[in-house]
Structure formats: C-alpha cells, structure tokens
Image (cartoon, rainbow, N blue to C red; front, side):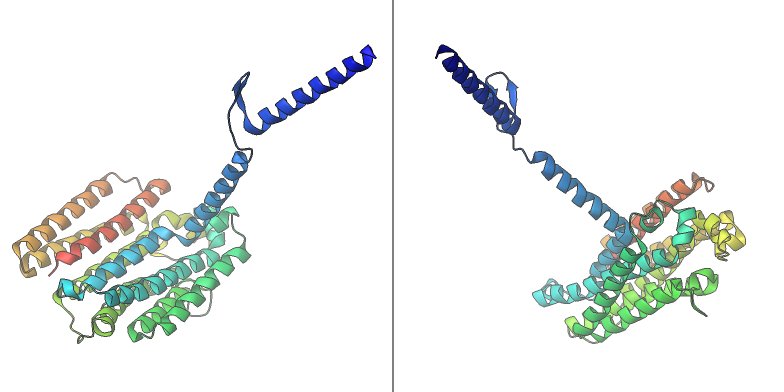
Length: 352
C-alpha cells in the first residue's frame, strides 16, 4: 500500500515536471521560476519574412527597377511642363499622369527583362550575378514575367484611349524588341549606329508621348511645344544615347566572345569613355547656356546655371578618378550616370 502511494506521488511529480518543461519550451524562461511569454512560431514568421524579402530582391534585380524609377520620375516631371497654373493640378490631371506612368513603367520592365533573356549567355561572362545568369530564376520564370509585362503595357495603352500613349508604348515596345531579339535585320545592340538611333528614339518618343498626352488629352489645350519641352528633347536624347553606349564598357569580354561588334569592341574602352564624358559635358554646357539666355526669371536662371554647373563638376571629378580596367567601378559609375539623369528631371522645371 505504501509502495503504491509512493509510485503515484512519483508519477504525479513526473507529470508536473513534464508539464513545466513543455510550458517553458512553449513560452520560454529566463531563469528558474520565471516564465516569459514567447510565441512558439516566431522563427516561422522570421523565415516567411526572410523568404518574401529574398523573392522581392530577386524580382527587383531582374526587372532592373532602378531604371523604372527613372521612367516614373520622368513621366511625372514631363507631365508638369505643360502646366500654366496651380489650378491645372486637378484630380483629372493626376489620373491622366497615372495613365502614363503605369504603361511606360511596364514597357520599361518588358524591355530590360527581354534583353536579359536574350543575353543570358553573355551575362554569364560579363555579369554572372544577374538573376538569370546566376540561376535564381529559370528561363521559364523569366519568360513568364517578360510576357506578362509586355501584354499588360499594350493592353493598358489600348484601354486608356490616349493616342499619344498608345503610339508611344507601341514604338517603345517595338524598338526595345528590335534592340534585343535575334532576327534578321534586328538585334540592333550589335549594330552601333542602329543601337544609338534606337536609344535616342526611346528618349524622343517617351518625352513627346507624355507631353502631348498631358497637354491635349488631359488639360484639353492645343499642342504647343514650349521652350522647356524643346530643351528636354535635345538634352535627354543626348544623355540617353550616352547611357546606351556607356553600358557596354564593362561588357567587352562577353561581347567579344559572342562577336557583338559594339562601339567598345570596335574602338576600345578608353575612346568610348572619353566620347561619352565629352558629350555629357557639352550637354551640360548647352543646358547652362539655355537656362541663362531663355529662362524667364532671375531665380530660374540662377538655378539652371548653378545646378547644371554642379552636376557637370561632379561628373568631371568622378570621371578623372575612374579605373576603366575595373568593371565593378565602371558599373558603379554607370549607376552614377543614372542618378545624374534622374536629377535633371528636377532641374528642367526651372527651364521656363
């Protein structure tokens, strides 16, 4: 009888110990006798958040969203040029601007992802860190994303019923396709003259489509190409052409391996780099002269001259210290050029 009671007491103590251990396991404890509420599934939540962040990072890098940021900034900036007063900032204006932002952002993603699909072999040599080259996305995933954005940009351009946006998106789509795809008379990126024309056409088409869309189909006014708009066309065509040529500088090894006769392959990195910097400095000189002579107010003159002079100085300072043999530094400099490109969208608002 006594032995039975001892066994029962032992079982009770063991059960309490197991219950306590389970409680500590579920909620955590800092020291004996103190229990802290600590949800059991915290690690699971962290793993989910980490996985979602990784997927977003891969998508961000595949779509090259830094260039999309430039496109969105450009649409907003060019949309403001036709405005004549604060009264034009109506809900209809912001809706009209959104109708330009979304399809142009989508067609931009289509173009850059298509280029990665076609150039995956070259990228394995030049840029093995890219999403397709590194295997983070399969070709099937890449094709699905590219096709989806291509279809969406064209569908939106049709649904929004704005002829400038429709024509602008179609031209952007066709030129971007011709630039990359391997078909007779296409693959413009391997033909330096056609590549330069295609990149310049991109800039011209984009600016013109957005400006005409806002001025005529959103604000309802006549088409009048203002001084600021003419400046925008010239400046951004030249700058975009430089970006298109410059991006091939760190890709010479892969382009030579695949017999892509780019400007850099034909003439060497140093000559192409010097040409790009010279064009940009001339472009900034043109901007300073235009602002000084044609801007309507002293404030506008001051901002355009000082602003463009500052950007030109930053460009010259970084260009002098660039080591062309280091592809990582060249890639960083290329991203710096994109920042200068985007900064210009703020300065053009003073070209009035």
